[in-house]
Amino acid sequence: MLTPNLTVNEQGHLCVSGVDCTELAKAYQTPLYVMDEAVIRTSCQGYHAVLQQEYDSRGMICYASKAFSCKEIYRIIHSEGLGADVVSGGELYTALQAGLPAEKIVFHGNSKTFDELTFAVSENVGRIVADHITELAMLNEIAAAQNKTVSVMLRIKPGIDAHTHDFIQTGKIDSKFGFALETGEAMAAVQACGTFSNLKLVGLHCHIGSQIFETEPFAEAARVMLRFMDTIRTECGMILPELNLGGGPGIKYVESDDPRSFSEIMREILKAVRSACDTYQYPQPFLLFEPGRSIVGASGLTLYRVAAVKQIPNVRTYVLVDGGMCDNPRYALYQSEYEVLCANRADQPKDTTVTLGGKCCESGDLIGEGMSLQTVGPGDYIAVLATGAYNYSMSSNYNRNPRPSVIMVKDGTAREIIRRETYADLVKNDL
Ligand code: LLP
Image (cartoon, rainbow, N blue to C red):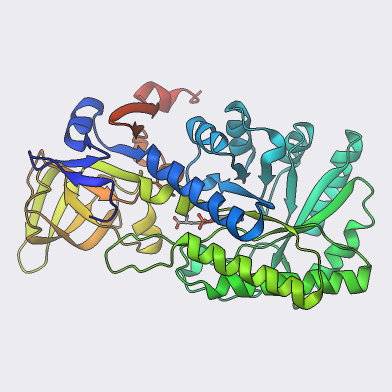
C-alpha cells in the first residue's frame, strides 16, 4: 500500500486507520472524500520537530490552505500550533471563522482586490505578502485609512528552475508571481516600501513551485534569498528580520515516485540558511514555511462507485465512475498520476489495465489512464489514493454536480467535516 495507514481487512475491504471504506461508501454515499486525521497531525508534528531540532523553533509553519480549506482543517492545524497561508478573502474568512488567530495568518495572492486587502487589514492579519507595486500603493492607502501600520513581505522570484509541471512552477522569471531579482524590480520594490508610511517591510518571500522531489532547488532558493537580503543591507542599510521560503515538498502518488521526505528537505534548507548567514555574517532570520500538499495530501482518498465498464476491443477499457473532473481535475490539468484499487476487493490481484472515466460531459474527464486495477463491475467501489491535497479545494459544480462530502477518520471512527451539497445548494444563488 502507498501509505501505512491503509490496510485490508478479512473481508478484503480497504481500511483507512482501521475504518472500512466500503462501509463508509455505503453510509455516506459516493463520491466521497475520506481523510485520516492522524496522518495530518503527524505531518504537522514532523515539521515542528525539524524546526525545533535544526533552528531552535525560530520560525512558523503556515499550512498552505489552498491545498484543502474548510473550518475543521484550520481547527486541526491550529491545535498543532501551525499558522496558515491564505490566498483569498474566502480562505481568510474560513480561517477566522474557525478561530485561527489573525496574527498567525499570511495573506498571499498576485491579484488581491481592494476589498480583500481592506478585510485583511481590518482583521489585523499578521503578514501580507505583496506581489506588485500597485498592491503596495493600494495597501498603504487602506492602512492609512484605518490608521494602521501593516507588516509586509515581498514575494520574490528567485529564478530557480524546479523540476515539476510547468503550471505549478512559480520561481522562474517568466512567472506571474512576484518581483524579479534579475531585472532590478525586486530592489525597486524594497526601496518603494520606504516611501509608504503605513507599511513595514518585515521580510521576503519566495515559493519555487509544488510537488518537488529534490532538496537542492529549495536550498538554492534559500541561498539566493539570503544573498539578496545581504545586498539590501548593503544598499539600503536595512536588516530584514524574516524570511518566508514557501511550500512545495512533493508526495508519493504512485509507487514509482521517490520524493525526498519533507524532513530531509527541511533539514537541507535549514542547513543552507545557517551557512548563508555565516557567509554573509547576517543575523539568522525568523523563518516561515508554507507546506500544503505534504501536510494533507497523503491523508486523503476518494471513493467512487462503478457505474459501468466499457470494453472497446483493441482500444481500451473504460471504468466509468460517479465522479470525475468535478471532484478531481488534476489529471485533466496536469496528467497527474494516481494509484487506484477496488475498495471492496482490495485483497485481489490487479489484473486489468483501465482508463478511469468520470461522469462529466467531456472526453477529457478522466481520473487516469493505463491504471492497474482489479477486475471490477457495476456497483464495485473504487478508491483513488493520495487525494487529500488540491482535490476538494479544486472541485467544481461542473455539469451541476453537487460537491461530495468529506469524512474525517480518527481513532477508528468517522465524522463528516463537510456535508454533501444538495440540489437545493446548487440553485441557492440563482435568481
Ligand atoms: N505557498 C505558496 C505561495 C504557494 O503558491 C503554494 C502553492 C504553497 C505555498 C503550497 O505548496 P505545496 O506545499 O502544497 O506544494 N493545484 C496544484 C498545486 C498548485 C500549488 C500552488 N501554490 C496541484 O494540484 O498540484
